[in-house]
Image (cartoon, rainbow, N blue to C red; front, side, top):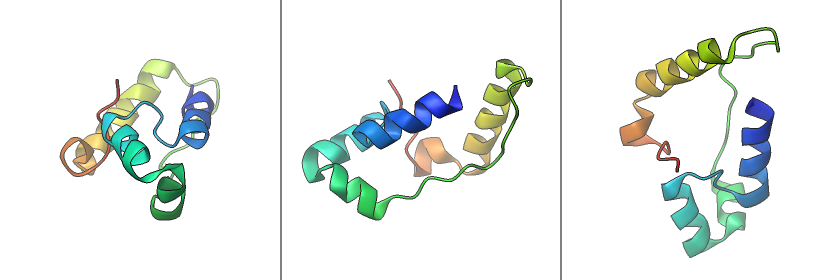
Length: 75
């Protein structure tokens, strides 16, 4: 699940995020590579239920208010 998302971001620079897609379209993937940083905030092994991982992801989105101050407008 996480690996697929990260490979999508690496491959196209936006991973389906609407705002990042526009940035790539306007400035190029090179712009994203040079100006954006991605971080893993928590790491879970494959035995952890996907539902729990998604809940933790939602938690971090709330902590950083990333819907308003970030790039969390995925398709």
